Image 1 (tube, rainbow, N blue to C red):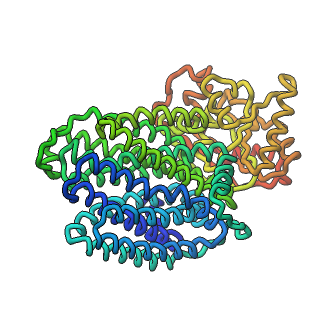
Image 2 (cartoon, rainbow, N blue to C red):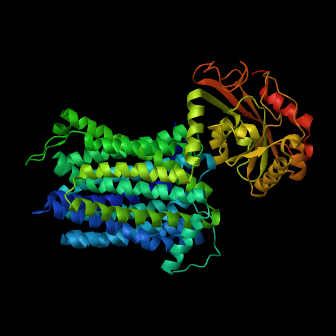
Image 3 (cartoon, rainbow, N blue to C red):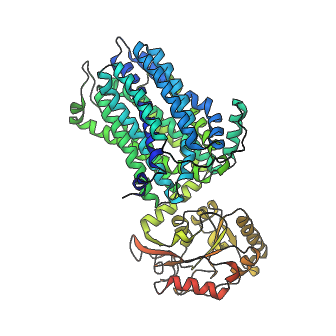
Length: 623
């Protein structure tokens, strides 16, 4: 059973999950009922008028995220989160009562105006929703928790759509009763969310919109990786809102399908998002693996573009249903594209959300998430306006999808250039999931926060990459400067902010600089890893540890965690067969290796000999 599913058995996650799922379901029950009402059931509605109303509706729902999020982020940092959630759910009940009146009157423009109030309620809930997860979950549960939230969100989209179609067939009065009832159930569920301490209770809430928007954007920009991850998330929603908003008209006017075909394709997209989210959790190995983001971005481009090149049925005057659609061979290609768009989106978005949560400062986390919501909203509003403009020029929806795929290449390459850590992590992930299979033992002995020194035996040129891909926390590696300068690997080492070091005979200045950078890393609470042998083994046996490790501990007496790599001797990157990297995969693909961690050691108990013995015992006889 995936760890994310196990979270549903815990009180610290289940009530929150149900609350957010019911809220998203109710949003979509109303929005989809309105969309279907406009696109399929409003008399004398032209395609141009339908495009206009659908895009205005999307924009009005998103606009409050831009206006309200700066205040919502402050409230989420200042107050206890379960208290805030209950107040937001009470507001939802009130808004849904207004929505019931709007449906009773059946006025399209009034129904659309209600979306602004619904967006306001969702904007208040957003910072609480994502800042709660890092507090309620353990570090290794964060990816799984985000996977469940993303799955729940798109499951709610799907269920909201299906329910809206069937309920709307019973009349708008039934739909009105439904949205009010779900809001009440969501409030009752929220009462079981356990309390969590406020992150910044001393904060003074400011209602100056422009000042606070600038402030939260500055907070987010303090960490470059976090800020550009937020831009990546915002770009995903730019694409996502385009696909979801234009899908009804794509189905009706280009595929010739009815609302049941629309449900089928949206169901496939939602299932794809869920599958991608859970696949991301499995591929991540319980760490925040941002190396998967480029893979998700690639899928968004390939499958988005392929929709344009597929050959759907030629629409006629009579809209066909799901069975006719499925029987057509070319439609299968469209369905595969839609599913894989969802899978790619799940793989892309889950690590980005988890990264923002993990690397944001605790006292400002909700405000940083509010900054994320502001930029998300800005991107989505621009997406709605952009789509409205493009479609008004006569461009088809499928051509718009192709344009989005091309734009995705440009935007994601720009982000990956600014933050090469994404590509670096992808290379590491590919290494330890294609060349090797890594068995990990005892890695929970590495502290979750604070400074510590990791020591490990040195078997191959990729030892650092295997450790970086297996350990949850970012690591600053100390490595021989000539290895640091190796082609291709140097890109990874520089991106990971590794610390090159040399012997005093080779480069005394570089050695002094290295020790200073190690001290700075410890002062910032980081993990530092050193290979105390000072070089890669030529025989498979461990060499004696150099005195540098003790010099580090004399300057900074931090805890030491011994590590050992097993099974790398004889691999492509080792020196068993002479010069490394000259004999292609002598042990085959997916060779099994092991990474083992021992009990932490206090600096006062450490010596060259004792540390050598600890690592030697961990390594055992397996080379």
